Image (cartoon, rainbow, N blue to C red; front, side, top):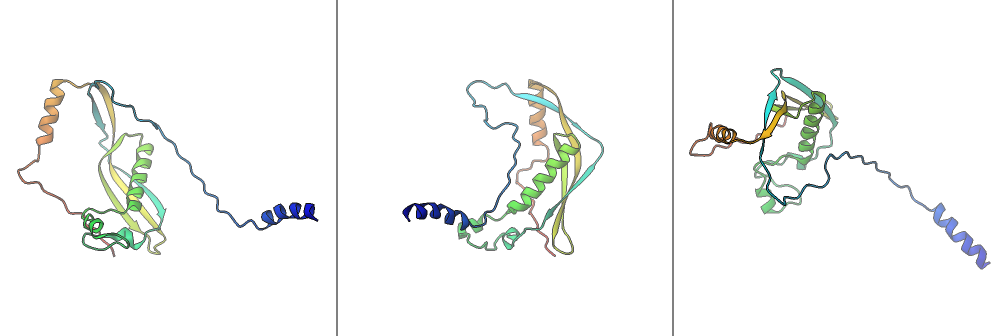
Length: 179
């Protein structure tokens, strides 16, 4: 009887096994370990070859937004402390950030560019609220002519960095439009 009981217990555990969820994760990483700075690094300069043609690229996502994705300065996020809520001046939903970054990544791949210069985003929710389409437009650009930075490059960067600066800093407010 004891032998039968020992054989029966594992069978009961297998028979009582509940449904399990399976998740799939894929990642492609170009550099996993960052190099450490253990010496002198020579600055490198490159030219930016900007296409004269404005491109447009769209990606569509399932709408998984929640009310927390629409926090605006001065509003309260569920579960957030007063200190956390006060940091929402330039709040952007992590989900919206992900959608924008993914769209940039796909556009860069599609147009074989390193960056998109002057990106403009248009984010629209479908009429039935099921999907969100993110469209980026801008000028694809690639880095070329890598070289050691010269004194002339440094002087040029210094002059360019001062263009448009004034004594008082100006901030462009972030506006969220919900209709």
